[in-house]
Length: 421
Image 1 (spheres, helix red, strand yellow):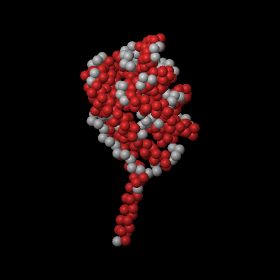
Image 2 (tube, rainbow, N blue to C red):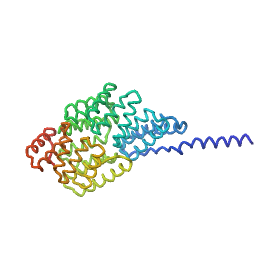
Image 3 (cartoon, one colour):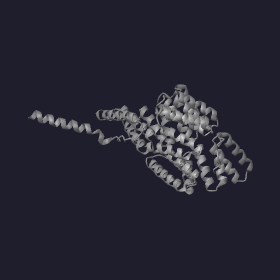
Image 4 (cartoon, rainbow, N blue to C red):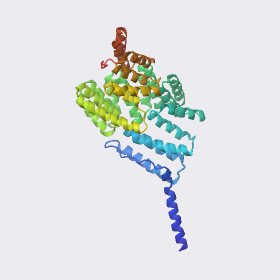
């Protein structure tokens, strides 16, 4: 009887101990994906989730398990668009890992990636630099340093980082970063060539490869090369069946052709799978062209709710809001407030400067707008939208020479550009 009692006590104690880790760390649940969003892929993710959470229960001090769970959440954030749910979940895993091993390279690299996704660029740079200083440099770390420096406007440092990354491991990640840097500095053809290399380095059917091919399509699209853009979007849609971002790209192709019903239907299909802000904004662009102001207002209100959710989850999105509001002449007082907040965070970044210029323009502060658009164009960008804004600012200031010059540059960058400012 004593033996049985002892066994019962021991069993109860072991059961209590097995639950103890969850008192300090309770992982987020894996949410069901929306219908049509890669069921087989999700089944693999569910298995990973079950396996890794079981390992954490059995060995709560195993850092690799927390990192593996964070990777599951980060992947789901990218694939499902449920950023406000999954990025905080990933951060919780990584903070738990780091609390057990403050210098664990994998946990620190993954946390840097999440911070970049949440637009905490200064913090991300500090963390990436810390990893680089304390451990042997890896391609991933230099990729993070490139991203952080780009977003902070430290473009020379970004180039240096991507060069090191390319020397260590040329591939999809390195080529795509090189492409973006070339685009920033006005080398649009070079940007396309680098992104083609990134596409070739990807494994068809994977999310990374599909994203890269869509990015190549967007490069073509923003240069007015609609047929080339459509070809890339169609291939991405075939390689990763009905990839939502490929559908959105095709929608923009149809919008250019004024096939508004077809464009809107494609965006509706994308939205049923992923609650992506960009998809709603593309729909708003279509409704603006149709002259449907009620629909535009409704879509902008929906976007605001999504941005609020992102912000509550720790995502800094002042530039996104400023550009959205300025582009659609919506809440222009709030637009400039967001632009000011973004400039305080990253005064040297050209996107932040562009957002500031655009909101000042909307608020009829043209001389100040000129100062910021000049800063935004200092890298010799061939971005048609930025050049078009510079043209409109010059026109308001009565500078006909600059007005014509920037207008011609915008047309050269994208022959299909239309003055909307």
